[in-house]
Structure formats: structure tokens, C-alpha cells
Length: 349
Image (tube, rainbow, N blue to C red; front, side):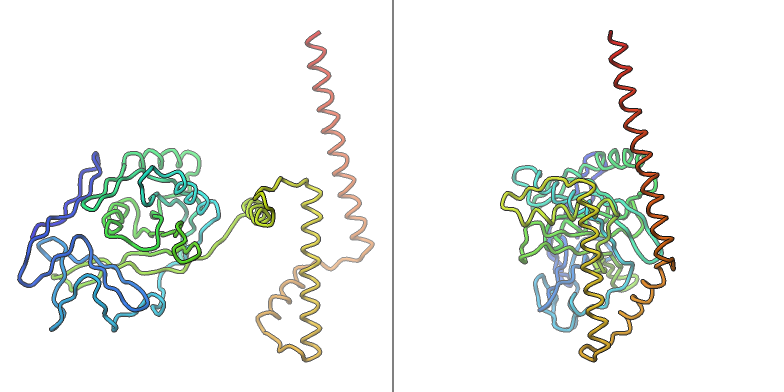
């Protein structure tokens, strides 16, 4: 049995080995996809001599698509490993790459950039990588990926390669070979799948990490284990997300930017609504209508402790002083702008 060969970096072609019969091994095209009733476990099995194959399990030979009820599904598996935190700009970039994909392309792939902590991986940026897929091989422009990463390092030196993404609902047979390339670029990279086609009715986002499996010295393979995914954002990203949310309520799906005063008024209204909700909850707990929740009580105590103790008179004086400073700065900036405009006109005379 011939082993799987990976093309050189220049042509970036990854091809599977041709299928040949064997007495004890049932050879598959590239991967062993073991399906359960509630989930899938994708494994790439390689014998000591190379190749991709399936070893007989007892009296039953495991083959592609066979159902094994004893294997745990993704919904019941315990998730181990770091928590993957994704920023909204990453999801927007992935969706934009999918909409701009080449004609005939079924999916797009790209590199994930971010930072690695002790217990979490934060994905803050990404870029797409050109590639071509067929039933027999997958070609990835690795030179383009390296050049793009070098350009990103000039802008954000703290961001490193943490993995790669692909659009689609499932992990394909080519994903294992692409993941092998990214394993050389990053230590234990993650694989992110984004269901841009909404096959399940919504955009499912899943993260995986590869883990070695098999018998030492004999059959060795790779299994993709799911990770916990959370969504985080910076304050500047929150403004964009809120603006996109408001476009759902308009028939034209467009929404213009609001002024600073309108944003302050909207934020004050939201704070007032949240305070009303908190007061209603506290009154229900005190009257016995709702059972007290210790976790909510801890959050409320932490919120109260963060509010500084200050008298109304002192607060009013501090607010008026800050407003006066703000008005003074605004007046000086307008005066400077008028002076510059007047100077430009005098120069032209």
C-alpha cells in the first residue's frame, strides 16, 4: 500500500494514494469517517508502512459510513482543551470571503490569527487563502498564505497563526491534509468550521483540535475533538454589531450612523431599562414571588460595590466641572479650525 504523498510547497498539491486491495486492511480514499446516530468522529488512520486504511475491529470490519453505537457522539462528548473566543470581525471576514469565492468553488479556507492564553485561544483576525479542490487532490496557495501573514505581522506583531477555517457544515476528507500543513505553522492548531450555507437553518460555528489516536507502534491516526466556542468583542466592535442588528428592523436592510448625542441618549435609555428590570427582580424576591438566585445576588453585590459613594452635591459639581472643560475644549478646537481656514484664504490672496 502506497502512502499518502503531500506535494512540495511550491505547487502546494496534496494528493491521496491510489487504492490497492489488502488482506487485513480495507483502504479508503483519504479518511475514515465513523458515523454515530448523533454525531460524527473523523479519523485518519495510517499503518506503520504508510497509507490510509481501516483495521478490522474484532469480527466486524469498520468501513466508511458504518454505524458504531458504542462510540460517543459530539453532543455527549466531554469537551477538553482551551476555550475558543471569536470576535465578530472574524465571522464577517469569513462570510465576505464566501460571498466573493470563485465560480464553482464549494467552500473557502483561510488562516486564523490571534493570541494564545493558558486556558483560551482568542481569534481576532483572519484572511482567506486561494485553493482548488477536486475528488482526487486539493491545491493550496501556501506562498500566498506566507506573504499575507508577513504583512499582518507588520501591522499586528502580537497576532500569530493559531489555526485555519473552512466554510461548510462537516469536516471533509481534505481537511485532514490541510490541517497537517497548518500543524507545521502552529503548535496544535485549531480548525474552525462556519456553516455559511445555513444547512441546519442557522450559521453553526464549531471549533476542533486534533488529537493523536491509535496503538503505539502500530496504527496511528488523528481525531478531531470539538472545543467550546464563545463570542467576545471590543467596544468598537460592539458599535458595529449593534448597527447591524438594527438593520433587521428596516425593510431596506440599511441603517445610517447616528450622532454622538443620539448614541448617548440610547445608551442612557438602555441603562434605565436594565435598572428597571433589576428593581423588578429584587421586589419579586423580597415579596416571595421569585426564588432567590445566589449567582444573581453576587453579581448585584459586585455592581453595587463598584458604584462610588458620593453625595449628590459633589456629583453635581463634578459633572458641571467636566461639562465646562468639555465645552472649553470644543470652543478652542472650533477657534483653531476657523483660524486655519482664515490663514489658508489669506495665503491665496
